[in-house]
Image 1 (cartoon, rainbow, N blue to C red):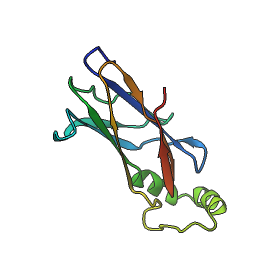
Image 2 (spheres, helix red, strand yellow):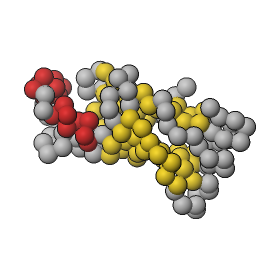
Image 3 (cartoon, one colour):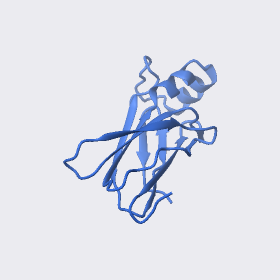
Image 4 (tube, one colour):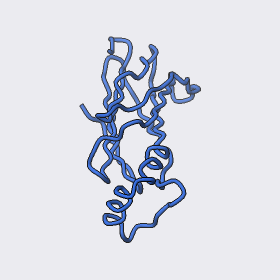
Length: 138
């Protein structure tokens, strides 16, 4: 919950390669007060069955920048073991280069954004093994 002096952050992940939420993705949250300040690790959580991360740590007063680090490699590795996922992925990505070692071209996704006190920031991640997209949601 944000106050007049703090911002708040939430996120969720949709795996667009299979059209469902990405469950079990570890997310770390960091913040800083000013562009030249050092990052302060605040902790993290993991996405639930709906792909949402509802219990990220609160941001400290004076936060101006936030970084969300998504550990997506393990998520894709668990599906790399699944023949059904590989078949769907192969059908959809016939001409795309494969990274057979990890199942994901981008093993981590780090998103940094600016915040203002009193505002809420919902940052969805649309994810697939070969790319990702983020935006400010509501």
